[in-house]
Amino acid sequence: MQKTVLERIERLTEDVVSLVLRGDEGPLAPWEPGAHIDLELPNWLTRQYSLCGDPADLSAYRIAVRHDPLSRGGSEYVHLFLRPGRTLSVSLPRNHFPLRPAPEYLFVAGGIGITPIVPMLRAAVASGAAVTLAYAGRSRPFAEELVATYGDRVRLGRPDLAALAAEFPAAEVYCCGPASMVTEAEAVFPRVHTERFEPTRRTFGPDTAFEVVCARSGGTIAVPADESLLDALNHAGRAVPSACREGVCGSCEVAVLAGEPEHRDDIGAPDGRMYPCVSRALSPRLVLDV
Image 1: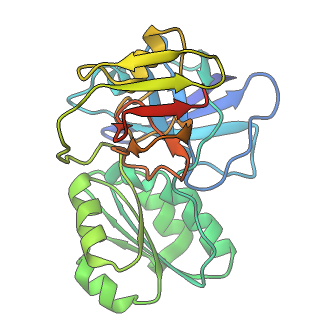
Image 2: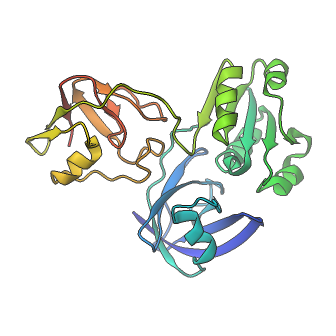
C-alpha cells in the first residue's frame, strides 16, 4: 500500500466530488489510462476508484466519487465525513481497461463512468488519433472541463448507440457507465472495450464442493458448496488480498497451476488466473500458487 494525504476535495456536481491524494512518501506508483486503485477508508471499508488525473504527474492521484443513495458506507463516508489533511492508504494501480493504440477512438460514457475515460481521452488526442466522446447522464462530472478542452469532439446527451456504430465503423470503442448502457454497447458495437462498476447478473450451475491444493504454502483445503473460494483460503490461513468481492476489481487474482476454474468475474480473467471472490471450480481439484 501507498501512503497519501488528502490534499483537497472539490465538488464537481451535486452528487460527485473529486479527491486529490498527494503522495506522503515521495512519488506515487506509475499508472496508465484506465487504471484504478483501492482506497482504504477510515471506517474500515475499501473501495475501488478509477484514476482520472494526469499519468505524467506522480506527485498525486485524482479520483472522483459519486454519492450513491444506496451506499453501503463507502461513498457516504467520503461525502459526509472525509476532510482534507487525512492520511489514506491506496493500493498500487491495476488496469483491466487499458487503452490500445488506434487511429480512431469512440468513447461512450455515462455519469461517473467518465472517470477512466478522462485520461484516455487526453492520451488519445495527444497521440494524434481521431477522437469522439459521447457523454450521457443526469449528472455529468467533468463535462464543462471536457467541452472547454476538446470542443466539438465532445457530444453531450443520451447517445443513439446504433447510429454511432454506423457513423464510426472503424473506431476503437471504449464504454463505461451504467450496466444498461454497457450491455447495450456490447450488443451494438462489433468491437468494444467495457468496464463495469457492478457485476453482471448471470446464472450459473449449483455451487459444488471442491478441493484446492496450495502449491506454495503446502496443504489441501476443502471448499464446501456454501463457501466462496476466497473465504475458504482466508479461513485456512492463506490470506488473499481482496476488496470488491464481486468480481469487478481484480484485487484477489491468483495463479492457477492445474485444474479447471469456473470463471464468474466481469473482468475476463487471463489464462492461468482466476478471481476467488466469485469464481469456483469445474474440476474436482484446483492447484493454486498460494
